[in-house]
Figure 1 (tube, rainbow, N blue to C red):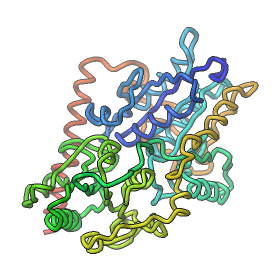
Figure 2: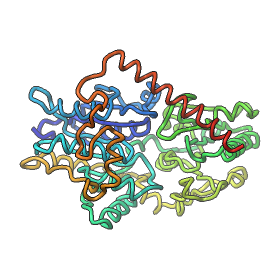
Figure 3: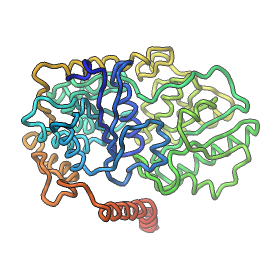
Figure 4: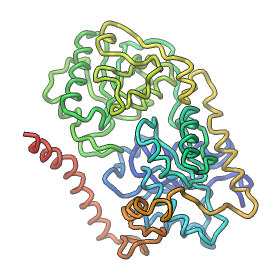
Length: 443
C-alpha cells in the first residue's frame, strides 16, 4: 500500500558523518505531508567519521532505530525489509559522500533488478556546493530524487546533467532542512559575537592561528561583548572533514580575555543568543541569514575557491575583521538570499512541497518504479566506477566482492569489539600521527 494511502512513511537514512546524519534525518522528517507519521530507521556507515553518541544527540532528531553498518549490512537490511512479513521501506535517504551514493545505487540496483515494487531513493548535499560540482553530481545521478537546496543549485544541477546527456528530471528544489528558529528581533545583553569554526577551512596552522588571534583581539577591543568560538567537535571526534589542527589546541597557547570562550552544542541554540555571526564559509551563515542575524563572511584570507567563501560573492556579507572591529554590520542582498533557499521573509514551510508531491506520485505509480539507472556504468566509466564500488566491497555489477565484511551475517560481539578498536586506531593515526609526520617532512 502506498504511503499516501496508509498515512505513514517508513524511511531509512544511511549517513556517513555527523553533518550528513543531520541533513538526512531532518530531510526524512520533512518528506511526508503534515499529517504523515514518519517511522525513521537510521544506519551509520562505518568509517573514520562515524558520529559519536554526543554528535548524534546534538542533531536533536530521534530515530526509531539506529545502528552502525557496513555497506553490505545496509543492503541486506533493505533486502530483509522487503521480504514477506516485514514492512518494506517507502523511502531511502542516502546521506553520503558522492562515491558512497554511487556504490549504494549500484548495490540497490542489483538488489531490485527483478522487482518493480521498491522504495523511492533520495539523495542530495549537506550544504553549500562549492567544489567538485560535476564529480559529485554525476556520482549521485540515478537516484529518484536529487535534492537541490536552492533555486541556484537546482539550475546548476540540471545544467550539469543535461550537459553530459543525462536525465535531469530527478533534480528537485527544496531548502536546507535545518533552517528554522525564531528570527532575531533585537540585541541581546550582552551583545554576542559568534565565530562558526570549520574543521578543514582554513587548513593551515598559520591561517587558523590568525583567525583565532583576530577573534581574541575583537574580544579585547569590545570587553562589553561576549565572544564565542563555536566548535563542531570535541578533541578526538571526527566530523565530515578531518580536523588536524583543532582550535582547542591553539587556544591553549593564547591568553584570551574573560569575555571569550569556547562553546559546543546545537547550532540553533547558539544562534538563539547571537547578534553577529562570523565565519569563513560555514553553512551556519545560511542558518544565520535565515534568522535575520547580521552575518559576516571573512575576506581576510582572500576570497578563494579553496576557502569556499567565493560562494558568497554578491551576498553583501563579505567583510574583513578590521571593518567588524570598527563596527560595520553587513547587509545581505535580498535577491541573493532568495536564490540560496534562505526564506528569511517566509515561505520556508512550503520548501519541501515539490519533493513530497513527487515522492507520493512515485509511491503510487502503477506497476511500481523503473530500475535505478545511474549515469556511471561499466560501459560509460569502466576506468572509474570499479574503484569506487570496490571501496565499499562491491563488484562492478553491484554484487558483494568475495570476502566482503559481514555480507551475509550480523557481526558477533568479538567482531564488534575489533571494529571499534580498529576505528579508534585509525582515527588516532589520522588525527595525531599523520600531522606529525607531515610537519616533520616540511622541516
